[in-house]
Image (cartoon, rainbow, N blue to C red; front, side, top):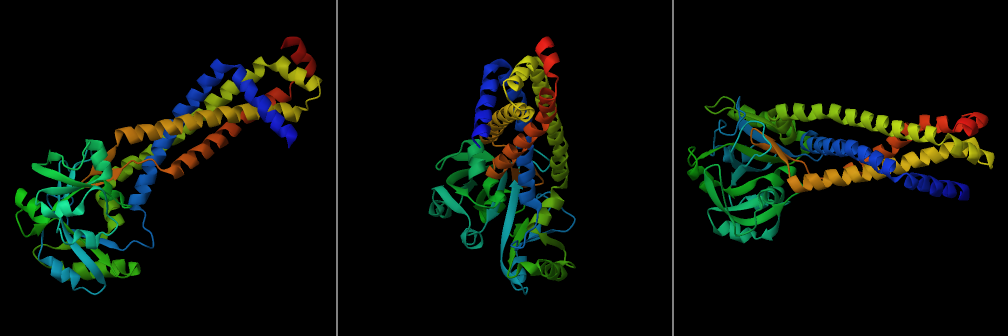
Length: 383
């Protein structure tokens, strides 16, 4: 154990002795891990928004064969009928107004909901600044998601204009549900009167069921009741609805995994090349270490340790840079009224450091063998 500790100290000193080479190598690794961490953050956000779990109990009732919120129009009178369907625990009408229906990095989404129903239906919504009471008192007030507010620089008491609306920011809210972080909740009558739809028409109904295992059965009952009407419905689990409606966005983000793979291959090549050049430039030094009693295994471990230090330093720098960049820019990708926030996740940081360590060890294997297996006589003469 003591010998391993001494080898680790010596490997660190070897890296520090050649500062310029070590810094440049670590920066190269940082660039690759920056790209990898950013892409993994996108992938994690996508998985959270689209992968179903056993606890999911929410359905979305939408107009059949409609996608953009501006084309989905359902009578608000459907609400009583939906609540009466067996298996439905609660339902809330939602009117959605967005600035852009296509794929965009700057989607502004307003959700109009009944003021008396929001807190009952969504108890996970927490007001972190401002107050819920201030929102209820003003017809033009909005509860703005924390990610949305940070991206726009909004604080309680501000006025905000978009999508033909001008609203008063009554509070900043946060929630474990990603969708709540990127929208502004306003009063349903206010949004209906401010758009061309008018009172009595909504975009969708969000339905919570009693038993998550009955999602499909309840969805079939809802569509069976309204499917033959003048405004037929299509009902899907919330995450399935997101995956289907935002399929272009899902495919685009899924493609980025290949960029992450390219970053990983680039890191291996860069680190292996740097360590191999270093090992060949220090042949005489490695031979001297073996001459004074260092076994070949210890020389190989020295190179592995140096590579691990460089990989971890570059990985930490790249991951921190990625998180700082995402926290600063507050990117939100949206499509057809649905939004996806790219928020730093601690699990991505842990995975990134694990990947950096594995890549460093893989990249160091060949240089370590090169340093340990050379001929002592030739290395002392030609090194």
